[in-house]
Length: 99
Image (cartoon, rainbow, N blue to C red):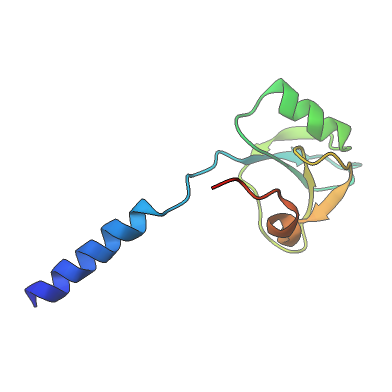
């Protein structure tokens, strides 16, 4: 029994050592008339990130946590191409961070 608990503790600690760093991404609420329902930004909420979302066509109405529903149209502040993308494709389209 002690070996099982010890093995579980070691596995838990080892797993935590390889966990990716938490990102501080968020989303802006895009009001009606915008091509998307939310605009995802990376890092902290700043004027530069707001400008990128506005350039993507988002009329910012506030901030919120990002929805991952497939039917939510999502603009990306970090992508150069303006327009919307389905949130389900974010993982495919987002640049891969160097590890």
